[in-house]
Length: 118
Image 1 (cartoon, rainbow, N blue to C red):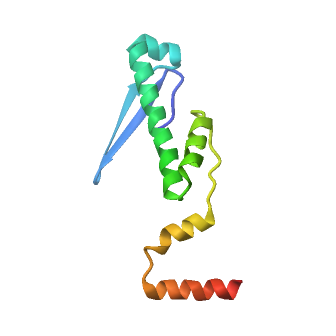
Image 2 (cartoon, rainbow, N blue to C red):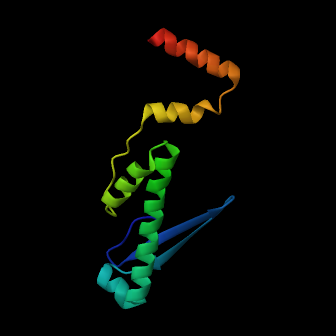
Image 3 (cartoon, rainbow, N blue to C red):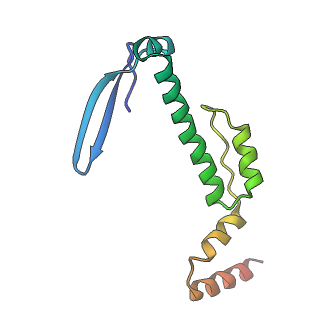
């Protein structure tokens, strides 16, 4: 999505392969305008769906970095839509997650490097 104008019109671009199409669409200039145009149920349902997708992404990041389920749940409970969350990375979890993808030779090389660093 591109810039929002004062009147609520937003340029929406979609790409498929080499083809890109941009369409201006009036979503409304503010919440009251959106509700007036589309109705409360549509605005609520779409807002909730967007928030759900964002929360799912937070949960996936926790799973991908090897966080314990309790930690992921606590982060989800503390999450506030629209507020940027601090992304924490656990280096040990990242290494152990990638460890299984390494060949035996790469594992030996990694252990050698780690021992040299210690």
